[in-house]
Image (spheres, rainbow, N blue to C red):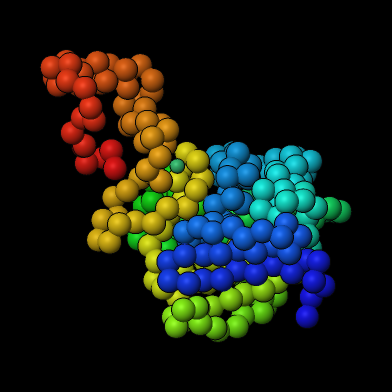
Length: 264
Ligand SMILES: [Zn+2]
């Protein structure tokens, strides 16, 4: 039994998740991958840079992003998880971020960064049904390797899981003194329910695919849809030209224009 001050609970009930942090004394409710989305939102810049340039941001930057994540979900910016020892790792992920020799990692930031990337990579590899996920190809190639489930296995062992019932329906509750094992519990739950999801390349929130429609390119928020259209039209200039043409064709009618297939 963990110290009550640092007990965190994550309850899966149908499609809903409830997260309770004893530190914050508050329940957070949401759809699936609430915690992973918060993690990826806060470390989004670091993940994108890493996938683009192959280099890890400075340890200070990783550490402040982690502090922001813990503050958001836990109400306190203390990093309550310990980094996992990656000494025995000689996987793609370490080659990617730091060459084969991770070097001294006093504060564990290389380990945390590898773990977050590994989680990201396994989500897009295992749960994104698209052959080549837009923007996630590198993640799939580099991070989706089976050997990278190192962190998955280690963190799952830190979870205590108890089946229970809520209003007569099956529910599963996981508890952990830290938050990161609960992020991995979200992946575990998605695997159990064969969910199809991906990570929005713009805001880094995780989104579900509608049943039998795996074309969705973003989470669907207006800002992310617009960013995707700008990307599709080769930049802001191309987007403006397309927008002007579209308005002309719609005869200046107000309202949402007809959807194009790539806009979803
Ligand atoms: Zn988004």
